[in-house]
Image 1 (cartoon, rainbow, N blue to C red):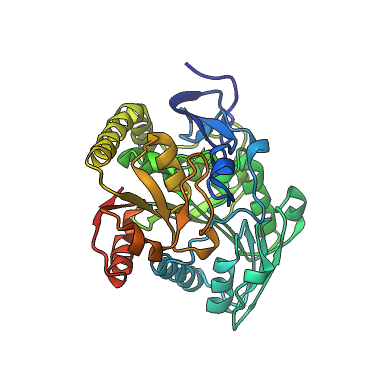
Image 2 (image 1 turned 135 degrees about the vertical axis):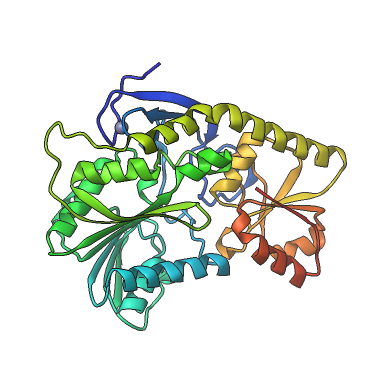
Length: 393
Ligand SMILES: [Zn+2]
């Protein structure tokens, strides 16, 4: 069965549905002040479809009017030492490998501006960012280079700007029509000789392989594998010079330079890679149902045994986990970001507490939403004198 909308990457009429999740919260990073407002938060459907021609995956039930990226949007991961080490090494690698020194840098969707500050600091670059959720009071001031952020969306009109290095990191997956944005990034780069574009998105290859249902949520309406991200670049006249899976396979990064626009009717050759991707898509729903059953029975057993269970990490993965499994076993969610404390989980309403609250809550089990943070969380628990069972997704 195919649906009638064309693929937002390649334009083919070949989008086939393969996975659904009904009535999920339409926002998972929003700060909600009461359990009632959290439980009453608007919901929408996930209906994931994959393009048979390029492998792009979209939530075809996505309604952009249901999203909110405001000062209430709290997405930063910068309170984690593990994440900061990754961020710093990524900035250093880009600066050194691609010669991003004393250059003009633009970042589309810069969040709180932490990565721009790293690019300024590491390469003495002049950086300009765009993000409606930016908070000037929390701006990081680099000791070298400069950072300015405009508290608004980057728009097509901004394509007239010029920059040597155009960054779009963890943003393209929020855009249901990614092609015009990618084309605007190319325009900004094409206004300067030898300019480069850098894109980072979640790598859907790992989501499909590991059945990472916790990484499927409403704000992410676009999911890329290397084959579909490279195709998107090709379609708008960008040529990938590096395409890599990083951070334990969680992120896909691409550095591209400006290329001529493809000629009308030219075929993009990626057959073997596309076939492997489409096979993983085909079997996903069955494999994912088995993983969900496994988690549901684990939670049911903990609940029956009266074990106290908390989640560690209150971001999108936790919202997806709780709204998919709908378990009574989890009464609290822990986060190291103090801006999230005293707020409540969108959709299910559990309070978000600081790690120190666990001293009184005495959990038997801590479910770690991202296994890359197990060591950091284990150290944090040790400092609190706690040794609960750690179970990572
Ligand atoms: Zn396509």
